Image: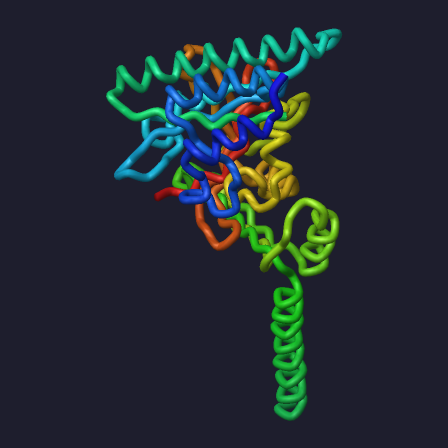
Length: 124
Length: 173
């Protein structure tokens, strides 16, 4: 098990801060490639992924994907809540699996729309 | 009679002046600001609701949200043209863990606005059902307003299970 600091260092090194569009935000957006890498770091640190937001880019500025691609794409922003009687281990694995699936799905749509795609993880 | 009217006018003027002073006093002492104006589809509206919240209400709101937000200049006023209100939007609904985490960050302008906004959105927001990109229906609650010096729309969406995974202050670019 790795420390969460490995993931946080990766975020700082590779990510784009959301405070450029959202004053006061401490969230960081990653490209698809970096997000998939970060996912492994999160899993290794046994951190639950509560969900994530999908962003895109407009005139070199970050923008929430649904704002640019259309409101129907708000559903790309995912969440993963712990179910009753679910063990911590099972929840951890499910949160990781849903995150991976959501990133892949968002990437497919971004490619179809010929748009850039960024991921923001919301961890526990 | 003229003299009586002059005295009456004097007292009315004095009374109005005091109200203005009271307002300024309150606003100076409140740290954060959120203004709501619900004018979505106002042309379709048949009922005009006008609501101006008293300074006492504002002060109470600020106290109750004290732990959540570093308030800047809080003031609320509302001129609502309600079409389909958000009356039951939050009934039986729950926030996702993701939304709760984001709500907890008071400095985050887009996600961290006070929970009391949800109550105002329920009263003055507009509620509709739209299909998501996954083909499933989602209920949207929207309320135009301003917060933290920005003007935008407070947005909420919930799925068929009542899960709210979108609670966002959408500020247009």
